[in-house]
Length: 443
Ligand SMILES: Cc1ncc(COP(=O)(O)O)c(C=O)c1O
Image (cartoon, rainbow, N blue to C red; front, side, top):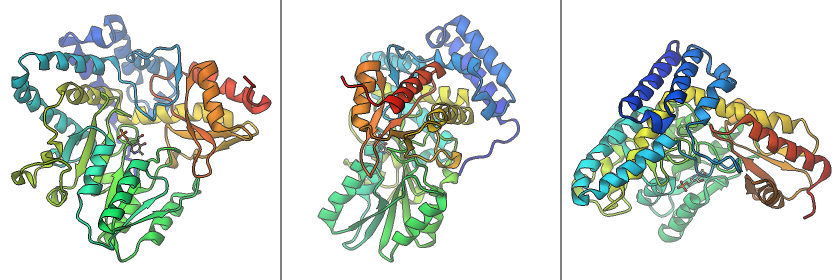
């Protein structure tokens, strides 16, 4: 599922980082990004970590301290709900503001000038995903990108779409509406929480497939537990039977280090404002080249565009700032190095989860196996209502989490990000430990 590290890649990432930072310097952006002194410290940090295994770099606090400084988050609260929407580094926010100002300068011309730069962003996304730019549409989020596919494919009455009870509510909801409108059948398979192995998940899909199955909708990681699904194996299974696979990658793009070939799906949708840290309201849709023609766009596009991926972007006048800011987000991501970022996020998860896991009364609804998850895990305390716990953490300690009380889960989804410090995780763990021993204080 994951791309293997190859010798020299770390060095390439390091050089790329220095190039990105050097490019920022020459554009006068270094001070926006880090300030000149900090810039030198970051360069020194990347020099020192060159050639090291990403798993080792994941534990190198000196390196990550420099990266943390690239974000503008306030430390008066501890945000452990980065799974919802990610905070952007300053370089991304600043670029978006620059583009917004630029658009104000003779706005009618900017459609041509800034619009042309969307192609540069498309190329950058295509390279990161390992796809042809002609298969990449720049969208506003996963909701829009995935519903384009779910509502845009032709189905006959009786055709089946197979998904799980763990897939995102608005996407399963869109399928439910098609069931009502077009007489298709939407089958939702049960998934264990957490599963013991990936084999269990493949077997659940295999059991759900019938002669009428036309499409599978599967989350790459699931929203409320962070559970990975073995997408490549599900695609292989489906393709052998002529079934297409649409992957909800809201949580996987720029979180895990992978390329399209590691999934081999037909459709893939993601929100770039989650793990790529791109401006809010940005997403991406991948459609396999030979399938573009058969997916109807949600909004009107001329029939001359039938085979053109840009037909999915025909939303009329738009603000270019957020979309062009994706370019800076990709550069920042590549500069750190996708594998280093993945391993740091996994390390942060283990930092708090391993400590809490040693306590009595703690229940994990996410597997802590590396193959099964990365940054996200959902944890509960026996006898403590998760919603009350989440409210207490926020009201009394300014710690932001996401309560999950569905599918038999009574837990908090905990999602640190790259800017999260170990000290912040210690504060969270101290409080959770106290509650696990003494219960939730009455207000
Ligand atoms: C698995 C999954 N799919 C889809 C979405 C929808 O994302 P967006 O609101 O960015 O469209 C989310 C949002 O959290 C999600 O977690």
